Image (cartoon, rainbow, N blue to C red; front, side, top):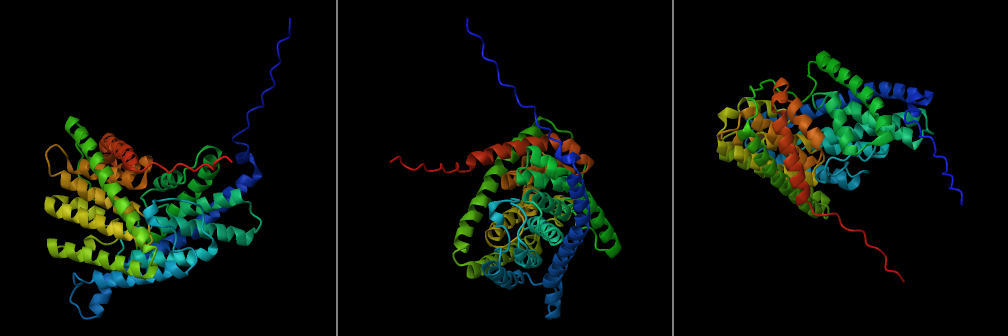
Amino acid sequence: MSAKPVAAPTAAPSDPFRLIRTRAYVMLLLAAAMLGVPVSVVAFGFLALVHRLQSLTYDDLPRALGFAGTPSWWPVPLLAVAGLLVGLTVRHLPGKGGHRPADGLMNTGAPAAVELPGIALAALVSLGVGAVLGPEAPLIALGGGLAVYTVRLVKPGISPKASAVVGAAGSFAAVSALLGSPLLGAFLLMEASGLGGAMLGMVLVPGLLAAGIGSLIFTGLGSWTGLGTYSLALHHVPHAQQPDLAQFGWAVAVGLAAAFAGTGIQRLALFLQAHVERRTVVATAVMGLIIGLIAFGYAQSTGREASGVLYSGESALDPLLSAGAGYSVATLLVLALCKALAYCASLSSFRGGPVFPAMFVGAAGGIALSHLPGLSLASGFAMGIGAMCVAMLKLPMTSVLLATLLLGSEGLTVMPLVIVSVVVSYVVTLRLLPPPAEPRTAPRG
């Protein structure tokens, strides 16, 4: 009778919290807390400068040139000159002005210090003169890059893993107040980075600490300077009706519409981007000219300000919701179409983030649909934002939170509808995307 083989002893499971109990991790937390202060100050200054440039180029400059107001054609030469400057920055400065927004919101790690001036310059010109992009992507890059650069000045031999944690904490601090809540900014960065497992646990706590401190700094600077916090917020939120069967049907319809619209925007942006990169300087100036012409066409066709099509749309969401009932369906559809086309051109060539324009396009479309029976204004607004955001960003949790937390207490009422619209849009968008190319295997010799 043969003896049964003896099983090899299994290794004891590793302790996932071992690192957190070390002195090195405590020092990492202290570093994240200290870095949250200067990074958030720089981020606040960046947003204040963008706001000042927008006012200077669109309001002050036309008046200084003798115009009674801002002419409707003003964005045409303004965006063409801006495109030339951004194209030169992308072409000649290290880092190519930061990540390409048509590729989506990706946090691929902190950029090198030599790349930070080009990232800042390209973003300031893009956002300051009216490109249809947001500040979140440049802030993520600048916050992470500044944090890593600062730590390496103090400790040149910092390990790559610790450097990655510090960079993530800097990014958390930079966008801490931008989306209205430091928690929402944290969700955005975690989902965009694809963090999970032990790395998520290691990055999350320092990042949240830096984001909390950064949010406090934003609030304090906004109060001290009187400039506000440059944070996403709504002040005129209509009452949301309890979800019913008709509105759940609308949630499916909004999700489907957003998936096709978002896929069309992204494919057109990527198509244009491929052509822009062949002649970066000239093509970026041409894209700026096209954005200006789209804004001019909107102003001429609707009698409204051309600025309604320009910029990220962050500060325009509150006026759009409060005055939504005063917009005709035709005007809302023209606004959504022009904003989407200008968004495509901006994604293909300028530098910035894709979040806020996606929110605005979805909000305008949702408000337009709310004129139809069975869909309330608040529900259409929230579902449009969530469904369009997930179509453009591929971040379902962040998209749900963006659409619901923005509405405050009314967001809890419409959350089930937003979840349905986001899920439908997400699944359909992924089905519409081309499958990834299969890696080629070398033939056997």
